[in-house]
Length: 424
Image (cartoon, rainbow, N blue to C red; front, side, top):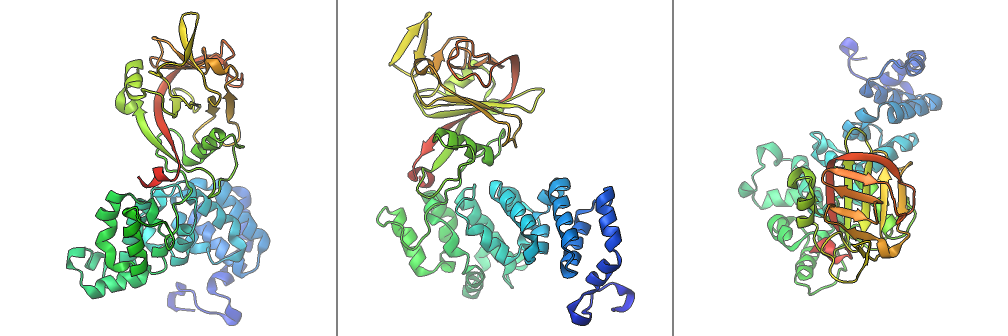
């Protein structure tokens, strides 16, 4: 044992001091979990290490469950520490998978963490190999470069300014990132971002990949060496998380909510055209920005509740042109694909509701008093009020409520399909 007892040393048969202390404190570990004490996330990670080395399977499972179910916020705030701690532990797959799935759903907090430069290389490789990351590829590139610089001796804080780099510096960074560069989906990076952010690092990219990128951006060459764009949804909302957007996309494709898309399925990019907190929550602002026959998605967060409402219209909301019928003095437009929906909160994947259009000739109603109206009263924005009484049964009746909600935030996105939308 080291002087002062503060450093773990090798003990007989490969048992570390941490394991030895774990043996002595086994009763405490069980008691802490049973009574709710010992809530420190770091200490629980240490318990995992100790229980793994001691082959204490029951304790091992308890601590994993406790971290996932009771210390969710701490785990999410410390993904990198947790992953660096447990990623080599075969018995810790549940916690590993939980962290990686949460990261996949919302990658930006992972990248922007102060601890990101310390992430283990193998973990980062595993993340970047995934097809379903839900973030723009250029953001992945930017953070990969930052990670590579921090990992490369002679760069980092002491030599961060690329203007001062020499050939050896670029070669060193190239060696650091040589396994990562082929995982970047350059076909998912726009022309402008390629020239502004990728081309300056031309020296760290192998000739065959770089030449193919250049030819690809000249529209002269199909993808062969490069990986194709990821199938994750590119989406930025203040109302819902990407995992709920994936559910909505599945509904648009007439799939089950939890259907897992594959590379042969359509790609989507949702471009925001209206945000109430930015543009004003009123009929006029909505109509100005959500104008024309455009495939569109509206999301609404209401006050005094966590509920979220929304609707998808394959034909848009206003200024839809001809092709309507008139009933009771109002114009109605036809769509067989429209639907409205609700979530209990921004994380809800269990209690969501969807109501598809029933009277297709009444899919959208145009009314001067409303910003938009799915059917006659099925889901209506008027001023800053939201109504969902479904008075004419234009849509299925799963959302019907007499409550009049006040809109806290509203967003409208155009729904863009096909791979080309991801690289334009």
